[in-house]
Length: 254
Ligand SMILES: C[S@@+](CC[C@H](N)C(=O)[O-])C[C@H]1O[C@@H](n2cnc3c(N)ncnc32)[C@H](O)[C@@H]1O
Image (tube, rainbow, N blue to C red; front, side):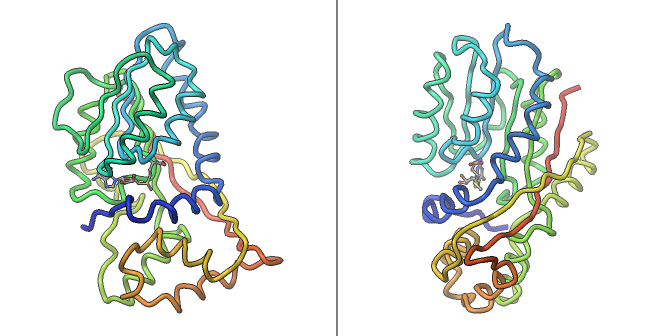
């Protein structure tokens, strides 16, 4: 399994984030789940696994509106600049010190009430082990929100096409593998499908930004021509408009 350096592709990932409704739809779908945490009248411990620059979790925490003095946040992110950016951004929402980790610690001193892994588990070296670690870190009354695209997702199909050109298996996981690993570990979860759209002005450079987000420095080796052509069927009045979806896997501690 290959991990992926999001530091290198940050501008291309930002392009994807700002031209897709993924985060907005994920947030909308998570909103009713958050009621599981009850009224904001007790300390709440939150872990953002693979936080990036923390933009998604910032929106989750704003939606939660937990009193800043009762909110404790821990972040795991391997790209140091992004971890720092996330910690500064989320420091505005809590008066407690923020825990920052470059890798998922084996053990935390206390369990978490909310764990978010928003489009992160694709990149795990050992998916089953990571899921077991995350489940161990969840409080008995806690809530874990995992988002992942399935192999039906347009971007995942691009991964399949690109890696097939290199005659290599895709070195990343999809929602299907997460579901299978949870089942195998006997961890109960609920899965829902969340549609979203990717929409941007059509140009070779914009298509290329999505490809760089997906393949990073492997793109020249794969060759971009076929992959650029995969967008053609989605052209509509000078825009690329792709209706696709991702999966939400929701785990409760009890
Ligand atoms: C698609 S981004 C999502 C970022 C953030 N969760 C969000 O929704 O904006 C995937 C993130 O996972 C991080 N990541 C990659 N491998 C990781 C690992 N082994 N442990 C934790 N995070 C990892 C990347 O650095 C990147 O920030």
